[in-house]
Image 1 (cartoon, rainbow, N blue to C red):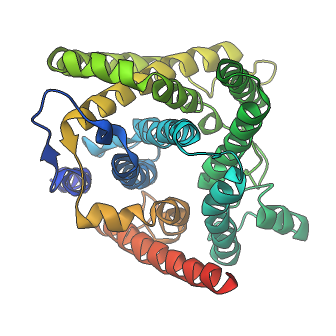
Image 2: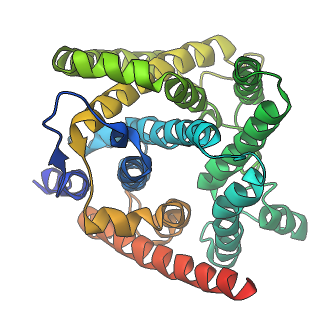
Length: 376
């Protein structure tokens, strides 16, 4: 019974997303279907689900302990990360095409929005990190400047910053849009290949760049976002005309592919590595299968956005502190006495983590806003 009650958390997240949503009753979906407000709503949903994914990993020991249906959230992290990567790529391309001279000053405008919270929260982690992984001054220094990550979730900020810079260089220097996209795709493939070849970080710090499957198993969804933005009108027209067929078929395909993906993960996966066997074939197979899984999921997300317009006070509030929520939550995931080795009930552990994360994210966002305003 206690395990069933845990489902109140994903249910609450769905309520936050769908509360106040309006159905678009006209046959043709307007430009607002995949606009910035919709993207922010999806990112709030993703951030809250990522926190749940990480907490479920702890209370189930990454799936080793059965906690009922909530145990399935061990596998949903890649889907949530895909939302961030897709709309990052989609939004970059749209801005580049619709805003005059967007590339001029792009990095100056884009990078601070994710790097300022990144460095501020790095300092917080260095002060209160409960896992005590940093045993010398050099580790502290590299973690402070971000070359190693005391906050493992900050990998996303590092990679997104690199992709922003690559986007800027490719679109700024290439003679045509087609060349720019091709070059960016090649660069992203090289980034993914490098991460796959590096394997996992076995050092005590465990925060070195590009080491671990989370660094690369959803990165190519960024390119998917760019390609969808480039062909938005045609894709949107196709999806709108065939919406009633595409949605149920896609949902069935998602469920079927999820079962297949779980089989591949269990029998191949990213951790089939030992002395003399880095496990590259297993990693590559798992990567391809998971990428297809994420692509199907994103297709469904876009289909839903065609017919539903999301928006409510909770989404708007959480949308203003999404990055802070994502970056700060691991402190509470590890410092609160939850999980199989501790005594805190799972309901209390999950609930306190959410509450303290949102409060902390709001305080950090407000403080950083005041500081940056004063400097201006």
